[in-house]
Every structure is written in structure tokens, then in C-alpha cells.
Image (cartoon, rainbow over all chains, first blue to last red; front, side, top):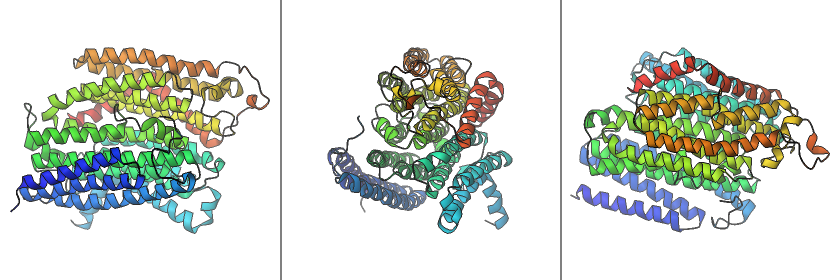
Length: 100
Length: 487
């Protein structure tokens, strides 16, 4: 049986990859994918803790997270599509009309 | 759970249910009735908000945890709900005409404002972290769409993209933090966490501290605390002005309510650790917010930075913690909501005919073109600066005295210096309003006509700003009762 530690290390790695991706990548869709990676890291860690603690609320939370993540991606992609129509690019570095 | 039991539990969620039903009704009317095309849906939304307000005040605040420890309806939730509904009502009134003018008469705008309010109220009621997360996401997703609703405007596209990406990023931190809180304590309810940790001495546990830190980062992103604020000015500037007002007040009220519940009710055992972090965040947030606001040529952007600074003042009250701290926080939230929506509201009206836009120069001579608008803007700006006898002054007074009482004298000194700095850029607006424009163009002296909704919103916001400042006893009493719940 894989110990709790193993799962937590993998989820931490996923989370760090997600955060790094958001900070480093410049393509809006890739950034959205990296955010998904962060949410899934949290899911993995929830499930691991849930099994370790013999407690179901962590697993139930994961279902809610999956639903919310789907809704968020839907809205995010819709925003990217409307943005592409006007800007003809989805590179966040080129989208800087608002100074800041 | 029997039907009667379920109905009884629903009575604790009455305000949320009314708002949600109105939102769905608006979507249906928009799709299936000619009413939608006539732009009358705004009035339905206003009626729904007022009904939700009555529902909130009618239902008894039992303080008992409903739906298997998910939500609670207590006086604290009632106060925050009223503040949120006041914000939503003012925003809806302001957008009645704005929508028509921008040629974007859509039912979903009003429905989304109501859905966002639903999420905000759920956050204030939540005592389970699943509910906190769901409330946060309901409000965030609604607001992502609201920001990007003028979809032919490049500026709004950019703001929506930045908001959705940074918002998702923040949710990731928040959620990952929750997993560690869960791992450390084996529970996701606030009472479960308290029971596990006890309220006594400080606890040290790596998972717990990591979880607390990550949850704090998530909250800080949503509240736009420095150094997690970089998205704020851009998103606030790019969004349609009524939506900006809504984001500045509603989201802050809801997230702060959840933050106070999380930190003071669920994990007070770790307070020595997170309180220092909050202290630093508060000091840095107000200082950076105010300094950045000093030289903004755009009033909208200036108000964005000023809302960052106000988040810092609000955080001072959270640091103070005690009964009087939470009381002060609630009064300040109410004051901040009415005066900030008011200030953005004047801008909404001004944008109407392109007479006065968002830049400071556009406000020149506003006091002569429309004495009502000029006076209203001056009142709101004085209140934001914290000049008596307005709501802003009373809020600051309560927050600062609570912090001194709790022994955070240095933080209050930083805050007071900040208020002085802030007075400079606020008063610049008042000076502009009552200065005759240098270049008197033909059109620039045009008198501005207000629509009924805009007039009602500004009068309501103005009256509340004065009422909280002049007759604070009533509001203070309500906030006091609300704060007792968290005792």
C-alpha cells in the first residue's frame, strides 16, 4: 500500500507544476490548463487524506471541486473566445491595453 | 429528512432562495416573454432584491447549523446579508439606465448580479468549508461573466481574461490550503476544527500552518491585498462601471465575512501565527494602495486603488479581532459599501452622455453642470476620506479605536498616516468638481439629466452615508449583536 506521504508528494509536485505554469506560460489556454492542474493537485490530496483519516467528507468535496472546475473552464474558454475575436491573439503579453 | 424538516431548514436560506428564484425568473422572462426586449427586467431584479431583504429580516436568526452543518442563519449573517443586498440594490438601480444606454440590454446581466449576490450571502452563512468554496465560486464565476459582458469592447475582454485567470489561480491556493486543514484536523466544518484544536493555547502543526497560509493567500487574492493586488486596477478599470462598483463592495464584504468566520471561529488556536501575517498585509495594503492612488489621472483607476487601501483598513479590524473589532469591521463594511457604490454611481451617471467620463478632467465643473451630482460626489468622497460627520469617519474611528484597545498601536499609527495621505487625492476630486473648466467648450457645460433609478440610488446611498455617520447608534447596536455571535 502506498503511504500517505507518497500521494502528498505527487500532489505537491502537481501543484508546483501548475503554479509555475501559470507564472511562466503566456498562452491563455495553457494558463487555464495549469489552473486545472492546481485544482487536481488539491483533489488528489483531498482523496489521500480522506483515505488516511477514514472520513468521507474529503471525497465528497472532490466531486464539488470537479463540478466547479468544469464551470470555471467553460466561462474561461468563453472569455478567451470573445477575446480572440477582438484581439486576434491569446498571448497574455500582447494583451495590455490597460496600463499596469 | 422529512418534508417539514426540509422546509424548516429552507427558512434559514430564505434570502438566498428568493434571490435565486428571481434570477431564474429573469432568465425565463428574457427568453420567453416580450418583456425581456423592453428592458423591464431590471425592475424585476430590483423587486427581487427588496423581497430578499424582507425575507432576510423576517426569518428568525436561530444560529443553528442547517443542512448537516453546512450553513447557519445568525445575526452575523443577517448583518452581512443586509450589506450585500444594499450593495446589489444600489448597483441594480444604477444599471437600469446604463444598460439601455450602452446598447446592452440583456436579461442575463440582472440575473448574474442576483446569482453573484446568492454566492456572496452563502459565503456569509457558510460554516462548512465546502459551502465557503461553493459560495466563493458562485460569486466569482458570475462576476467573471459580468466583467466580460460588453463583449465587443477590447478593454472588457482584457479585464475579464485577467480576472478569470487570477481568480482561478486564487481558487487553486484556497483549495489546496483547505486540503491541509482537513488533513490536520480530519474535519471540514468550522465547529469540527474548533473542537479538534480547542480554543486554548497556540497549536503548532506543519499541515495546519501550511493550510492556514495557503487559505490566507487565496483570500488575499480575492480581497486584492498587496502583494496579491496586481490584477485589481486593470480589472476594475476595464469592467463596466456598475460592475466595478459591485466587485469593489460585494465581493469584499462576502470574502471578509468568510475570512473572519474562518480565522476567528475555526482556527483561533493558530492566531499567533496568522495574526502577524495579517498585521503586515494590512500595513502594506493600505500604504501601497494609497501611494499608487496619489497620481492617477483616471478617477476610476484612483477609486480602484482606494478600494485596495480600504481593504487594508478593514483588515486592521480583522487583526484587532475582539468583539469591538468585529463590530467595527461590520460598521465599516456598511459604510464602505454605501459610499463606494455612491462614488462609482456618480461616475456611471456622468458617463451617460459622454459628458463626464472617467478622467479627473471630466469631473471639472460638475458642481455647476449638475449641483445634485456635484454635491453627491463631494459627500461620497468626503466619506471615503473619513471626514466627519460621514459614515467613513465613523467607520475609521471604530476600527482604529478597536485596534488600539487590542494593543495594535503601531498599526493604527500607520493607518492614520495613510488616511492623511489619502485625503490629498480624495480632495483633488472635490476641487475639480467645484472649479470652472478652463476650456469652456460648447457641450461641456451641458446639464446632466438623471433617470429615476440613478436618482433613487444616489439619494439612497447618500442618506445611508449620512445616517451611519450622524445617527450611528442603531447600526452600531446591530453590528454589536452580530459580533456577539462569533464570541
